[in-house]
Image (cartoon, rainbow, N blue to C red; front, side, top):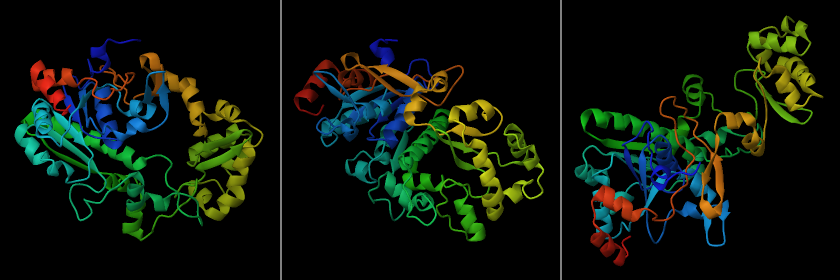
Length: 412
């Protein structure tokens, strides 16, 4: 559905209606956190340098027309934002940001620690401008500690946080997780921290610094690896598609691909044996309990061949139709199959934003389903500086003459 401009770039009736977010971040972790707030109803103002806007505007894939090219990557992580250009190296630009912050609830940035302080726009300065400001800083190693000034990317976090060393196959070099999980995990924790701090600010009138590090976020995503080490001295290593302490729980081949099968409990195992015509295997004294089936030699000799035989000759769809509603058995799908799956559409997890002559951008929707105040993810992202004058009028109180002077001075 085509929306009016005000609806397209504003939160509207969402759960965070009335919350104003200033987004200084770039690429992924910060922008995605701000976008999540926008999906939930916040008004998000994306601030970019007019001479050097968000580098992710150059990332593929692209929507194209005869007059314009627009990054689908940027569109997916910046939808529903108002776009402003400010040169923060100029005093007029710094003042304009302060004037926006004075009317904001949240600021999000993901520069290397110390960058905002060098600009004279660090947390302490902006907290004086607006004592109730929630200042969310996402970085590689965090705002404190001996490593805080180090540059970092997603793979930095995967390496430094231990995840890289755990992923892959035994007796082979570790493998990077195939998505930017360092950024994505930091996004999640940044949103949680921001909402917690916002709740505190609304209750007390006092904001705070929310400090989220990619490396910390990865450490918090390593499941049992930390306690395995601190309790038993066990260092996690790559295990391929197997689980560390339950079997069967891995990938199995079938006639047209692979399926995940995870019926490791006694109840699920018995149900699986019944479904696949070998009910006697549920009571076989060698494999009748979860502990017996987990023992590596028994699993490789008895359990895995049995399961492999169940699936041989059956397609993914046949297996899901037979067992998918009873036991954990799921086809391993390509991303194309996921996008076109009716189940994905039923959950509104692929949405469409209208970019006019450029066409429509189909992108993932919001996984947060709220009954009374649903997220609104099907909106376009801002062009560079698209709403600069509107935002400065509304949130900074600037008149046309002042905006014109800033534009003439190339601050905007």
